[in-house]
Picture 1 (tube, rainbow, N blue to C red):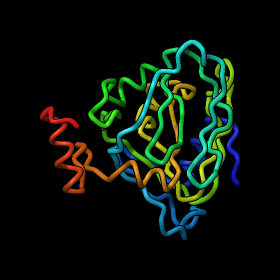
Picture 2 (cartoon, helix red, strand yellow; picture 1 turned 180 degrees about the vertical axis):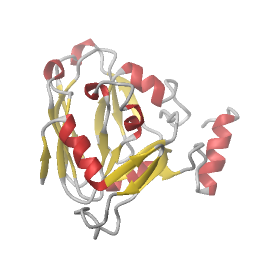
Picture 3 (cartoon, helix red, strand yellow; picture 1 turned 90 degrees about the horizontal axis):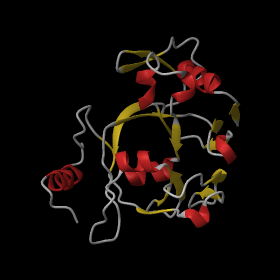
Length: 215
């Protein structure tokens, strides 16, 4: 497993695979690219379509740990700390749980639930990069914001949307997170840069939501 201890190392790792130019992603020189033989190395634009279960943590859970365990038993993040009563505990369809700050939750999901008791995503287009090997990088989700490891298995995806803001934000504020392969494929789908799903059924469901016909 490749271990990336700092945000700079993570960004360098991404740049090793790809060269950024505007809003496009280009291969680096094939002779110097150690991932040139990895057939699945892609970058694309996706939207989340899966509805999730979620609730705010409440004061009684502040300071408690929550680990994100995938359906195959892989521990993605061990002992992330619930920092605030307003933090949301989100559960994806496969059952993996994770913590989202209230401000971010309200940007990513409807706070009201549908007839199924779940929250619909507010699905803005997101840029993801598929990684060719197991990696470990640090995320500020520990006690008092301390860094803790996030492990992403080969074939998983890094969200690299925020890299468009490299010239606008300090590196410490650039957010990069991962989604394991199976969970990604069950919760995200390809879309255009304008956010239109490629899949016809998902496109119609999205149109229904836009018209206020939510479940």
